[in-house]
Image 1 (cartoon, rainbow, N blue to C red):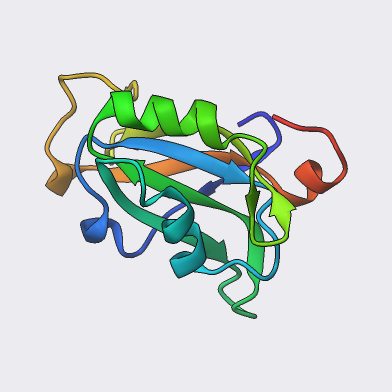
Image 2 (cartoon, rainbow, N blue to C red):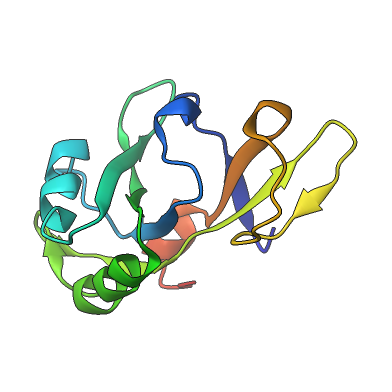
Length: 139
């Protein structure tokens, strides 16, 4: 996992299927889901945004995800918004990496048109640890 951790979104059903998802790093503590969504809403196929929070404390973990229905709009957002301020800090963006897993451990690459049905698999996002981003280790 390259020093990262797997994050499972318990509200998986809310995320669009086969979306183009962007990892948003260096999210400031002042940013919530609504502010992150507002920053990306100008792109035509914007679907949703989520700031990841610590389960115990509810505090912002310093990263989030933004979803687009159209990969072209997602790629445009990735280029245009990388380094722009969301809240009081500039954010760093990259295409999110995720894998599909079954109970048997089978995997499918992101973006594959032959992904198995959602009922049999859980979507995981692999992201760098928030503390490694703050120390400047980057992506």
